[in-house]
Image 1 (spheres, rainbow, N blue to C red):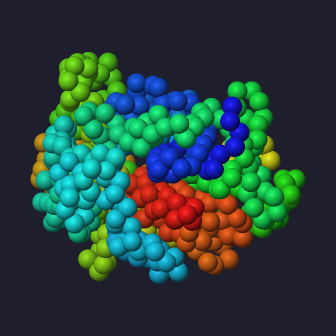
Image 2 (image 1 turned 135 degrees about the vertical axis):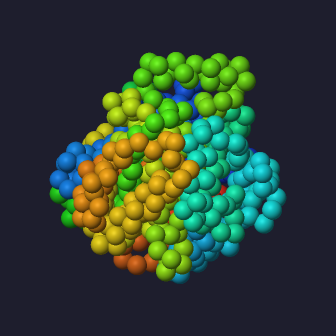
Length: 536
């Protein structure tokens, strides 16, 4: 096996697949991508409607659990899924294509990160994209590898939600990734011809035939090897052997907001006191590694239904889906060809706000705990999930051992901020307003969570904490900036070290207002240009 490359990329997720394609494109440089998970061979990955399958799969999912917090979920760890295969989390996510708000990126630039404003990022969103409806306009790309689709909704409850939101006074938008994010809508999706179109399909697979690209799966990276202030190699475990792979130009960490800081810490890069407490020599002190964890905290409003045209996890409910199984098998159409999350919204909890502060996800079933509560889903009903778009609360991702196979400790520290608590409670009230609109009259049963008897802010917050969840958007743990907690600079180079970058969602100094997959792809597109510019 070849053991020397120009570029070594750790992680074949949403960022790593993009980098693999772009850095190998001109044929000048040898590129090696290292992925801890297996090849994405499971047919379930390609079926959009099979999203819930991966919440039970540890083969393709890291399936982490957060540090227990007695104020949340009765002290139980919060289930934290992350993709573990080619394509990373884009192989197991809900396939929603969302960019966030202009103000998010302008905020990054205002923090001193030159070149990261919305106008700087828009060309990279467009470069990666081919949009089936808005291709080629001022906001959308045409001919890019990442297919973005729009389609008529499959579930009547999705249409009812959009109609109800308009009855409640909220506007409809057909393009929340365009001029204005605000409104209710049907989600744009990374689905092509009835199949999931993640970064493996879009970026990695088309490049796999290149002689200068090597992809190693089932490969655990144990540490980055430093020679003084220069990253020179990685130590890996592959096919039962510990090996060293050398990088002539750069090592790029694209392992995500949980695993990139873990790997830096295992390599002796991080907070000195923490590393030395685990018998790890601190080779380069960067106290911000693993700090600044941000995530979209999620709450649900669960309502039983009198008209059951959604999804129930019962024998009769599954039999009712049988025609859709045949439709998908022979024509790649129907419910299995779509994400179960079809409708949503970006809305303001107060008219005084300048931009949306919550995101809604409407589902035609009773959905909690990442779809793992099968007993709940056996009952007919519907859910509307609300998340805080710009959280102030931050947490940490810190290794618990010098063993690379031990999962890091994930502390979300949700609701540390009074503002986050208020936004969440106000968001639940807003959802109730929509679900009370006339469009839901023929559906509406009993609100079983938070429960119609919960009226005060304190009661609502208490119930939210009992079922709190995630929207699977961890960021910020190797943040970009120039302050004393920053891990990378505006070129995504690890501060104080040579030939080492981080390129993934961990570099976001602030969480963007929406799903993070599309922004991570755009970050990687921009990073590829930076890396290639430095190579000339």
